[in-house]
Length: 321
Image (cartoon, rainbow, N blue to C red; front, side):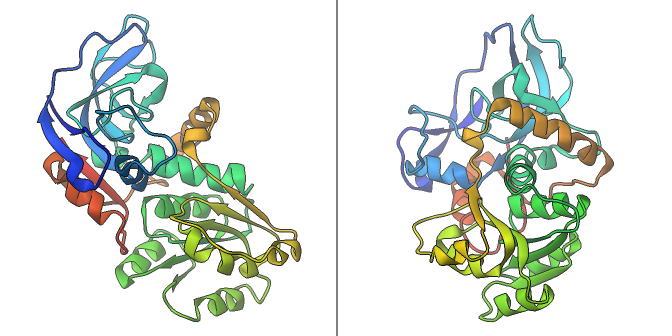
């Protein structure tokens, strides 16, 4: 089969498309999936570069998000059968390939109204957004959430989830196209975070009270500026950061604010399974609908790894084996 392989950590150029042995001999509890689309997430680039806190043994095939068709099951598998459309998480073998192997517990039904490309944008983006909003921030209907960097896969998932739960959504984006997309997904107010006065607009929109929740995609740049934007008892959930940041603790003390974070690798399995159950009805009825920015061939994986860290994200980037 064709698969992307990484023999050494480094830049995007270490992603090589190779012919590899077919995956065979799944155990009694495993499922073999023909991958029709693989999601590319920023964490994939940190792992590939060797800078992430949790690294695979070399050589490896990247990719956690994927969607496809079940082509073989172990004798003890009962939840899925050959021919089922599924999306998955935590594959045993990476999803940047024509096939991937999973434990049965980590594959979930892909509703017929969603494409495989959309299915490849469910597990990491929607699980991250759901855990950030409802488990970490304890979001409640009627509260105001600022999604800081709302144009990427996680940000758009968070907009949809927050809107569905009855929150008032303020989003930010660095491009006009991105801001229009965020507004189309249900944000009430969308601002340019490159504008020097965007924070003034947030305070004005909340009549000076500030926002209840901030989902932060780039904490090393924004966290210090986020804290004065919080209402009393406000919560910041850090979803992404690429370095260090200096903050004034008095900005936390003054409003008894909370700073917390999400890391799916540290999330208990039972919580992730519960999140998929919570997502299911919204995925079926179209309330939750992953936005696909672009689809590329496996051979273009290195190019996608370069693009995904650049400004101007517009949803999910996927690879088509």
